[in-house]
Amino acid sequence: MRPMTREEVRGAIVNLDPAAKKVRLPARFDDVRWHRIDYLDWRDPRAPTHAYLVTEADGRARGVLLRQAPNASAHGSRAVMCDLCRFARRFNEVSLFTAQRPSRDKRERLDATGLLLCTDLDCTAKVHGRPVREAFDRPVDEIIATRREGLRSRTTAFVRSVAEPRAAGLDRQDTL
Image: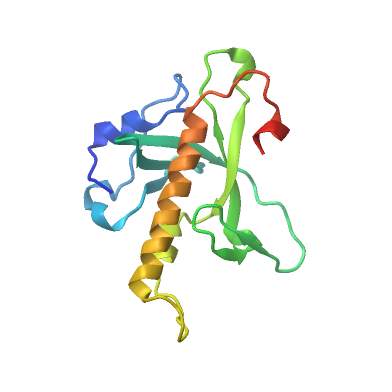
């Protein structure tokens, strides 16, 4: 990912409520190793259920404000898959995050889309992790490159889906 300025990242959030204060960047912003990440993500220190996700799409920075839903209590230790990194984790390590779609029409302000995301926002670390390799598997570098490309494309697709207005008359079943 290319390096971004503070102003560029703040201006990239497409679904920020106009009444909200400015975007609080992560404390580690100046230490970000841009060449090693596929997207920038962080939690708002003053609102722990709020998270931000910024990526490069269409040649510019684009990002969304996410709100974490409370984890429902689950029985047993079932696994849930993160929609971005596609790693299966325990049910309490993956949460539903929703992003409100931007709208000028007050009747549509509750329109949101969501995804299951690693609760600790560490998808990049998982994707860069060294895979267990069998004799006939592809080389490790190729596996990691494929994972990174998938993570980038899914992140960009999600950010675009939030940023683009929905066509009138579509209901949930039409979009699936």
